[in-house]
Image (tube, rainbow, N blue to C red; front, side, top):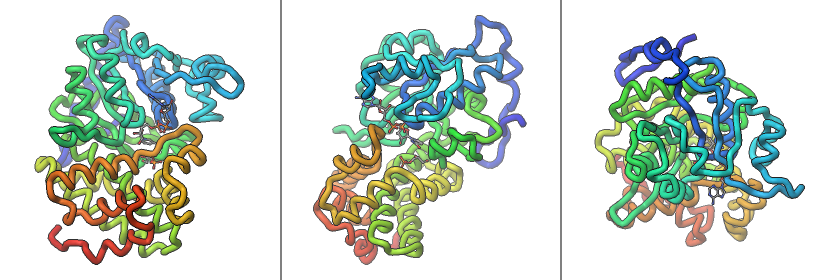
Length: 377
Ligand SMILES: NC(=O)c1ccc[n+]([C@@H]2O[C@H](COP(=O)([O-])OP(=O)(O)OC[C@H]3O[C@@H](n4cnc5c(N)ncnc54)[C@H](O)[C@@H]3O)[C@@H](O)[C@H]2O)c1
Ligand SMILES: O=P(O)(O)OC[C@H](O)CO
């Protein structure tokens, strides 16, 4: 089945022009994945299955690994290259023999013209600074990173950080994508958000699309990226509700109120964000899956069960074995934006999540906030 690349309003883009355009070895795109955590490893597996199948891409997919020494004394990179498995972040899954783990960031990106960024968001600025000026002039990027930076000038989405630091076009891919489920090829969907370059979006769709991973594209990079980023804050709230054993109706209410704040916050920051984006996989579907089965939900549940007495940092280390939460730091970053702009009262769910996770309020405050909830959006 050919990928259906659809823009807003149902317009179908040129579906096969990319596939028909390149056959010559010298023109083949070279892909590097920057990141090798749980999702980074699954993304590499998805991509590697397509680069083998499609003649537009070099077979090899280089995957940058933040090097670490395993309890056995071996280097993670060596083990990945020997076993074809990321034994720490995605055990039991073969990545594809054409995935080559590389601990040298500059070497990993040097020859690639398609750069896939997929690390926890807090590491992205340092990574961009390390590779600035060391990538191909014709490189383009896609970010799978759910998160944002807050700078003196205001919030900065990760795709913007990549574009500014590296001087290249950057799309995003977000969706209802719990990595462990996609690793075993269970059906799911994702959304590519692009700014203007439809041809680039088409290339990204082809790179990721498989019969079990359906990718569509929308021309709304900020909307797609903010959905992926903000749902992590709502997932923390959903975890509190689970930890307090408040039941499904309360959790559904928190998800609805969270979605309302996601939409309002996105549109206040970027008036161009489209309502329809919230109905794509990156919007309501990701919100549902993350509030049901994500890591943010799981650790927030434990935090509430412990009455806030054990910190998120401690629980993250104990429960996730090196994987990273994004929701707690995103809640703090959103809070900074809200405080700075005088919007705290407009976003009681977002602000309460930060106040609970930083220890200012008890977990039970998650439902008390709704009394303050404005009716204006
Ligand atoms: N796991 C999922 O199900 C999933 C799904 C969709 C999107 N995402 C998003 O993908 C992004 C990456 O998440 P993930 O699940 O691949 O990672 P992860 O949380 O599983 O793993 C953490 C990664 O960070 C690396 N790391 C640790 N310290 C580092 C440092 N100082 N510099 C650079 N890297 C360092 C580790 O080596 C590891 O690869 C996040 O934004 C996440 O929200 C995750
Ligand atoms: O496990 P989480 O909470 O980081 O969420 C994973 C994905 O973002 C779900 O799409």
